Image (cartoon, rainbow, N blue to C red; front, side, top):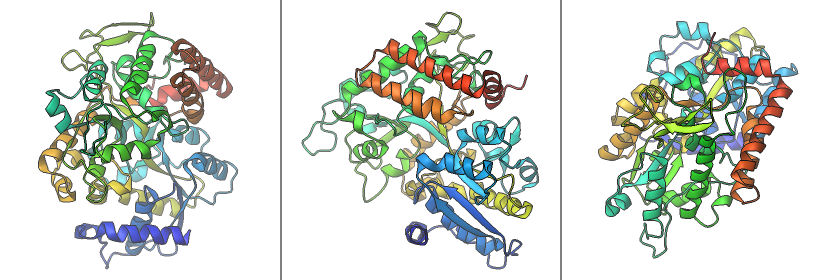
Length: 497
């Protein structure tokens, strides 16, 4: 662990060179938490963990609280937290993890209620946190149990020069996505003499690739706002899977592979990002990381050649009574733009911090202060501009104030485009929430991931895939208890009656 933190600190020292003085804590600050030790667990760094360790040193200098950052592989993180807190071991005070896991932890009474801390916090500027992250990501049953440090939602990125040469506009619908990908596929986009790819979308099993199908499906499944949801019927918890909308999403998802790298089914996110930053992709779906990664002076060949748009949508929407796709109308698609229903997807939700409810009250207080420090605009508005941190925007000020992005290396035009897409996504009242109920990892990371892999490998048809997902999700729901799952699913969508 010491070696890992030393590596993280070394990386951070390099990245912080030239940072504003706002990053340096005041030497005269009262050390109100001298002697308080806070053990925090998250995924390995420097992404996510590295910045937590660095900010922890700043917080210790300001307050006296010692932050120890430990890590376990992502696949083990949830179970490690659950076991530690549920068995009463309580060696971990703070977890920084996928916000979607929090509902299961909160249902077991394992998370501290942070609502009163937030209400009295004059530095967190809660109204500056974008509505989705403020009202859905941080809250469970109306109470704040999480503090956001990273905002995760997916967008489409495109090569401005390639589309310009082709005389094409960025895709607004998924059919247009395929049209642009087909037109660009096979062109040499980075001057190395090799044919490049119209679409890049990592699809490896056990690599969180299933988020992409949900990004595609959202525009066909949800039109009435976040509270409608894209996973289950909010009346009886039946999966919204066996229908024409999800079948169309599967068709689109598979068709993108016709314009991708030949080994796309074996690509994880690192493989795909490497193709993007070396200039080999005309289109791709990813989180907000592509913007900062594109300006990396050492590794990127696409600086100021990348545009971003909110996820494409559809002119048709699911009729949930019949399972058929029907044309959008003003009533069916109230958030549509030019007749197109867009549904930004908060894939993964974002890395967020929660505190062990069984921790010592002084530890809870100090730990909240640290999470607030990470979240506050003075720190986070800088951190989200640095590609290596893994932190993506979630505050309104982060897409309204262009200066930090220009200072980070964006051209003003590229920053305006990138931030415009972020703002359009964050302000869209039809943003789809990722799943946030007990069993989320089983629903998505096991059943959905497995059946998608089989479908893409031509082992099963789309109809078989949908039925298998439906059956698998029903089994998980029954195992956890349908009534309780329904109650928690409705609560995760903000449905209180």
